[in-house]
Length: 600
Ligand SMILES: *[C@@H]1O[C@H](CO)[C@@H](O)[C@H](O)[C@H]1NC(C)=O
Ligand SMILES: *[C@@H]1O[C@H](CO)[C@@H](O)[C@H](O)[C@H]1NC(C)=O
Ligand SMILES: *[C@@H]1O[C@H](CO)[C@@H](O)[C@H](O)[C@H]1NC(C)=O
Ligand SMILES: *[C@@H]1O[C@H](CO)[C@@H](O)[C@H](O)[C@H]1NC(C)=O
Ligand SMILES: *[C@@H]1O[C@H](CO)[C@@H](O)[C@H](O)[C@H]1NC(C)=O
Ligand SMILES: [Zn+2]
Image 1 (cartoon, rainbow, N blue to C red):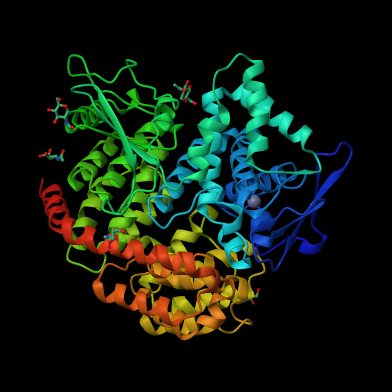
Image 2 (image 1 turned 45 degrees about the vertical axis):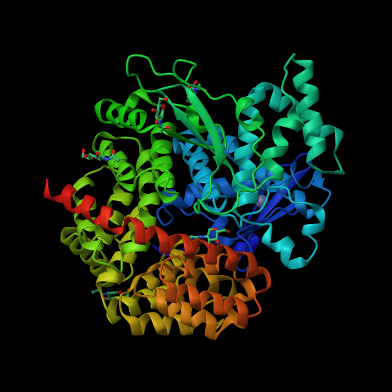
């Protein structure tokens, strides 16, 4: 069962486009700098972003493909039919395409249940970058986005994820019906024209006024699009007081947020009892369904009640809020607004959790702990604890967590399944949904034989999803010499295509055994690897948490031509500062928590 797909260039799909009676063709190409490009009439995709084959591709591939197609088709309206005046407002394209794809995918395939998952994933991603003082406003002044490199830098998680999040917030404030009415007016009034964000505000204002609403759209939205960052709202349920401040990982960084009060008061905060004073010791939960682009913190007593409620009956809260509570607790702890043990305590209710959302958010947040501690003595007790709690039912996530924490049964299973494939004479017995995680774990547990087999398969396979899974799996080995050889392969376009260079190096950098090698490697070959170095710095510096690493990063900034990677380097420097301090202040408490939890 190898690949039955027709040659990509003959594979063209037709979709009805925005102009009546016209069609949009979709084509898969072996080489493309981005995952896809929304050219009007002929949308181009990197093969793996469009081609799906039953029995080879995983469900995850299918979901990603659906999301990408929906995103590109949304661009036929947002971007192609109506185009932003200048690149500073590119969020009008990307935020809308990201937001609209949620509905499109949900509509054609509700069983994926992707909407809420993607909403929270987008929020988490935007919140991460936007918690740095070196973030940028969603819609910066035009004069700040003039050079090619500044334009390229605009294509980041702020533009996509924060863009989608603030649109969702606006839709919630004016109501979805009014929002859609306003957007329709926007699309028809500005067909074949150029817009800035004020044109969008005016269109939605028209619909709001017509429907008797009172929101001042531009006045409400401007603080969210023109300022960096987001607020954290602190609710004290003992006295009913509420205050807000700019949320930053570095609490001593200068806040550039104009606290005008409007952000919050016009941004309706939903609570159980519609007030913030707790009666009879009841909990209060704000930002139901996470529609607001802000985080919520509480007094310790209310946190305690919320966590108790989660342990008794988590289903009192919507799944999004269960995920968000954990995410909030972990981010608050990173910003030193709550104790780190509170965040860890919030994961206890997961034993009863059957929904995927809260688990996914937990795994994402624990990733930060993993990269901070996987080279230290905290790692042992942490692994033991994760194994103890993960008897959950999400197979792929479970295998990933169990195997990456070196649970012997898991490693044996992965090794055996992979060996069956090596001995199977061309038929792959591994279920498509499990391939990516089994490949990675088997290569990690194995040696040269497994690596060479995977490499040979990578080179000979003509199936894009299989190729992609193998390319990632090759970075999972723990053998330094294999990782070094793999890094060298990225310099040879016959081995690793230029478009895959940066993700290959990033994958190697995520591996604790490859992190230092990758950092040395990109400095030695910066001219080559930075040609398409999207998010490379972010991945390679993710573990940086020592003064020595910070000094190296500062030297890198001073001595290299950073080009479009400049902002990423500034953000990495700030993040490293924050990490150093966080590890210093929290390591002991975290070690103690994990040790106690596993002793119980
Ligand atoms: C926090 O920001 C302040 C002011 O900008 C800066 O001096 C300090 O180095 C930063 N600290 C960390 C941990 O990033
Ligand atoms: C939250 O979302 C759920 C599911 O989408 C919906 O049923 C509920 O009405 C929403 N709650 C609020 C307050 O918007
Ligand atoms: C909440 O309000 C009470 C009563 O005014 C006060 O004693 C307490 O310190 C406040 N808690 C926080 C976290 O601000
Ligand atoms: C976390 O849970 C432990 C054990 O139940 C408790 O002693 C501790 O106070 C909790 N920490 C916080 C910050 O709530
Ligand atoms: C493997 O496949 C080849 C070619 O189809 C065949 O000649 C050979 O006998 C097979 N070996 C095994 C062990 O099945
Ligand atoms: Zn796009």
